[in-house]
Length: 76
Image (cartoon, rainbow, N blue to C red; front, side, top):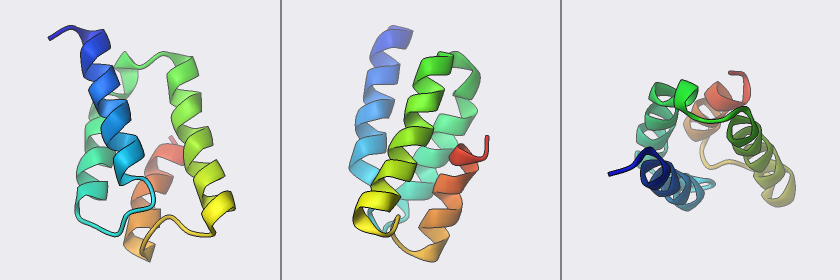
């Protein structure tokens, strides 16, 4: 699989998991952070922005443990 295809899958998984209250959040966050340097600066900024926008729009990011996971990306 090409890097571009892999990043598309990661983005789809990211959007699926964002705001959910499930163990998959930590798995997706770990996957993103493990691949962080492979993402363009624009994609990194997009991930951070989408997390913050989701929190602002819906008032939460899942359970507190989920929020802590998402903020690992925001604070990267």
